[in-house]
Image (cartoon, rainbow, N blue to C red):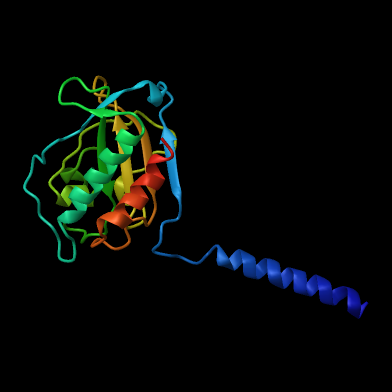
Length: 196
């Protein structure tokens, strides 16, 4: 009987240790995810894009420890990935609009709902002066930007006619270091855009 209990005990111990491994938090990317609106047509049929806001409507205001270069890194990497997928940037009547956010933790006095459009929250894009105002129409799996883990890179595709979100891709913890250089940002953007 003793010989039978030992293998069962070892097996239970190993299963318990493997289960605990899933509880460990990390600042590295946890993999990319994406959701698509039920009303979205095939996104591969679209050919042209533009930024939801080409220029920030508000003055940039970065908290200590954040670099303005992250904004340009993300935008450059997104444009590069879209072009790899056959999209062409245009300034006139784009098929889709593109926006990004990076979830950040901020003091409660700055993270007030009245400062944002419904479904948004304080983010790196907000620090860069971008103020988005598009809807998500009860998109399955949708959550507000400030409900994502800090450092989550979020890329949105919006219908310019209806002003509704068509697709959202994200990588939790992708931008763990807000001083990330272009190569790190490009890798994370590529991972997210592979879900498009």
